[in-house]
Length: 133
Image 1 (spheres, rainbow, N blue to C red):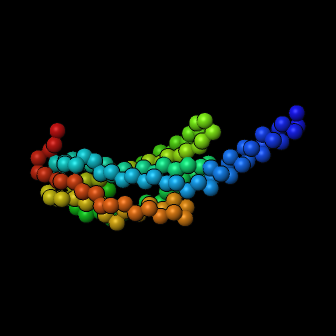
Image 2: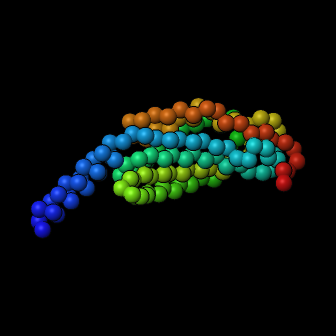
Image 3: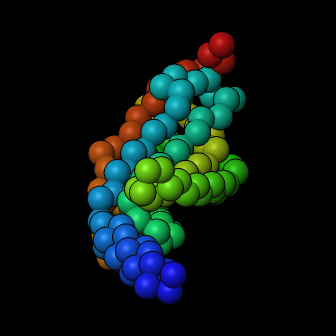
């Protein structure tokens, strides 16, 4: 019985080491909706998905043009273990308000997770005078 237990513990340790070493990160950045009125809010969301057992602990950086953060960051993290595979995801979001009519932009988006750095393309939305339903 103790031999089986030792074998099981060794297998779990190997599984943890393999999944912890995995460095596959998928980072998505969104600015929604694509069109808002000057008095409306938009949401900037950064979603990170990765394999392994360790916490993601993302550190996002970005610059705003014609937008101001009015709430957030709000964060949520989840962990899944399905059929021997582990995965984690983290969402961070901010509510942003436009400063004037025209194009608004989130740029210089960089997300750091541990020693990995992911750069994302600029995000845009259009701001108009009247509210969008």
